[in-house]
Image (tube, rainbow, N blue to C red; front, top):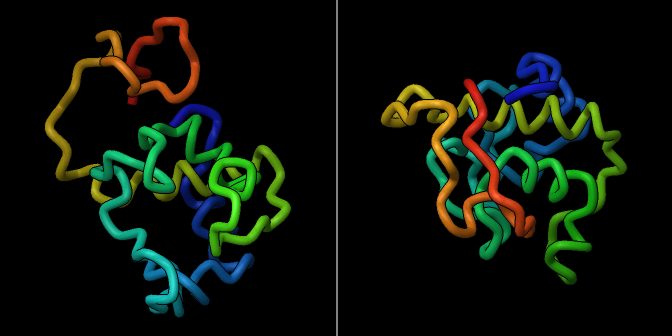
Length: 125
């Protein structure tokens, strides 16, 4: 994910206590099932039940989950843009090795790029 550092993201997940609610591979103590497990994140199709699972949408969710899904049990952690990008970068490493290769530069399909209407292309890995 462009602009994010997976190792810093793993540290953010640890420091923010994300493991109090989620199973997160690679994050010490992240073994709770109060929220959904974040295993194989890169292979998921949707985020918060209705948004396409894209890095852009995940960053928005991490920054303000209540704006996307009011009443969700996911709290607003007060993450900065950089912290959210780093955390998203880490989560998108989970399960990425099992994805079939999709060449960069191909247009995204309908509704794959979140709420934006303009066409977008797949980012380079």
